[in-house]
Image 1: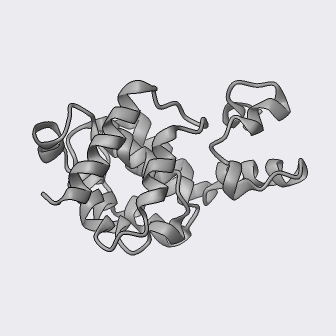
Image 2: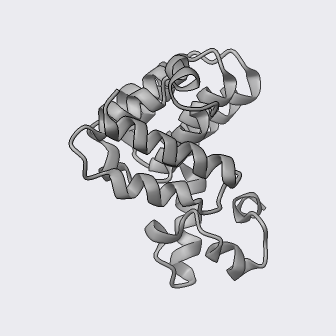
Image 3: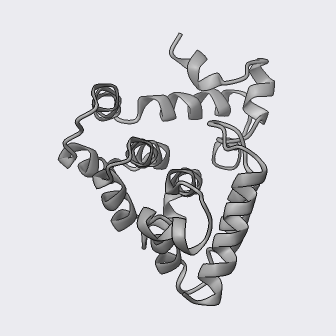
Length: 181
C-alpha cells in the first residue's frame, strides 16, 4: 500500500465516520476525493478502497458502499478512466448495499453508455431489480428531471446536484422524492 492509498483512505474513512452520508446532501468526503483526482494512481487507489475484502483489514471499518456513493457524486468525466471495473465488481458483490451504491452511481453519472452494466447485471433482490429496470426504462429520467428543476431555478446542476441548496429552493428535505409527484 502506498502513501496515497493510506492517506486518502484514512481521510475518507474518518470523514464518513464523523458525518453520516445522506442521499442528496453534500458530504465533506466529496471534497477530499475531488482534491485527490489529480494523482496519477487515483484509479488504483479507489479500486483498493472499494474492495470490501481489503478495506476492513487495511484501513478502517467502513463499507465500500459509502465510498462508491461518494464516487458516484462526481462528474463521470472525472472518473471515466477508472470507474467501470469498480462498478462491475460492485455489481457482483454479495453485499446488497454495495450493489445498490453501484446502481445509484450509474444513475447519477447520467451516462447512457454505462447502462450496459445494468442490462448485463442479473439482480436477485426484487426491489433493486425494479430500481435497475426503472433506470433503464426511463433512461435516467429522475436525474434528468432533477437537472431540469435546477436549471429552472438558475442553479448550476453539476455543482449543486448533491447540495442542500436544491432542498432550500423547495423547502423539502429530499427533493428527489418529490420530483415523482
